[in-house]
Image 1 (cartoon, rainbow, N blue to C red):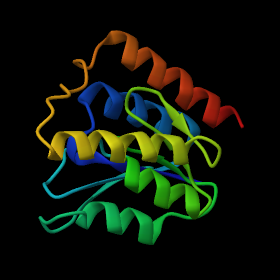
Image 2 (image 1 turned 30 degrees about the vertical axis):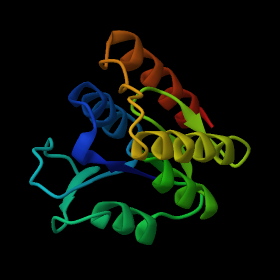
Image 3 (image 1 turned 180 degrees about the vertical axis):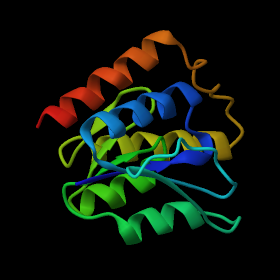
Length: 146
């Protein structure tokens, strides 16, 4: 079992929670991004820099993920691909997606994308806050306990 992070847009507090969890549980944690990332020196933590480009990091995560692995991402199409390969997904805000929920989430994402494409202003997500951080930590602990 390993943890993969779509790290380009992952909030720093979430990364710090993941660093502590990987060290504590001795699970392999890999952050993928199109830029260099500073990670603690640990045999359990590494970062991989991928070339810049559309979905390069996402495609690399899908290529490497195995059934039972956890992926941390806010990217819903990536989450759907991970789940199709038997992986688990938690967003940085602590939402857990699985085979039973991802279809509805993907449909809503596509609907909102269509609205935005037609000029409807839908707004963006709320700022990442302490409650999001707590919910992420709670969902991560739930996954690690299994």
